[in-house]
Length: 113
Image (cartoon, rainbow, N blue to C red):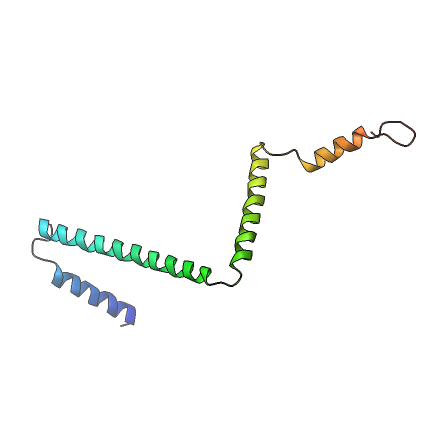
């Protein structure tokens, strides 16, 4: 018998022993809800602990100022790209350059295009 099979059969035996005769009773349901709520709370606290540890590590960095500056620059660039995609930003660079070139005249006085 493999370790996995052994663990699964031991788990089944535990479940059968812990299950009261009236498994559908209100007490069993309340116990199940309590255990689920405790599990969710433990998971949430663990995630909160990990986030706090990461925040402390970030605050201890010697290059925090540069990191924040780089983050602001990156967010600004992302904002520019997002507004261009949405069509509310500045004109396309190539289109602007093409219009400038078309508006210029050659040394002979003729328009470029």
